Length: 213
Ligand code: PMT
Image 1 (cartoon, rainbow, N blue to C red):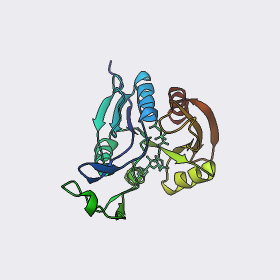
Image 2: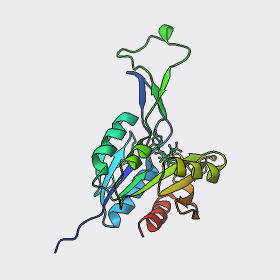
Image 3: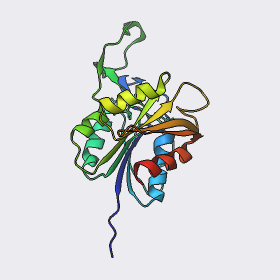
Image 4: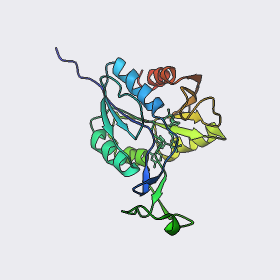
């Protein structure tokens, strides 16, 4: 007999917003959290699609990896794979802004402007939620340096997510690039579940235990 696999769509890593062919705006995301979630989802028998910004990690065995660079490319890939996914986890650190213009040639140092004009990127996960179908579970992350739970709760509500992983990035001891995260899981139904400071693979297990029991 055939068993139907649950399809899981995960984003990971940073985006790059190019200024010219040699410069971009980005952030320190290593992809470790998203890749740990993908590995854990594979080990639970999910069919896993991992949309990944530029990172230097080995692709998780058994996952389909889709490499992207900009927030716009990440959005395209997420939209293409969204309909077929039952569980969507947005662990990527998407740049909120991009330069209004990307120069085709390297900008000469002497011509480089003192300020860059930026335009907002679309909110990928909020747009996905806007087109959701019944039965889909959508999980976001909130990387915060202060008022962790309050800010995370605001994002959960503003983006209308089912769950958000409130992620303390105020210390070098965990968060961006580290092997550890310190996460509290918040649900739409107002649960607050401290997962504690743990390795990203342990955090991934806990998150999946709660969001897809
Ligand atoms: O990659 P690592 O080094 O392992 O680090 C892990 C991590 C810190 C990147 C990750 O665990 C994390 O917290 N990811 C979310 C980082 C972030 O961008 O948070 P945010 O609070 O800015 O965004 C809130 C949510 O909206 C996130 O799910 C984000 O993916 C999403 N978003 C944000 C902006 C945007 N334009 N589109 C989005 O979909």
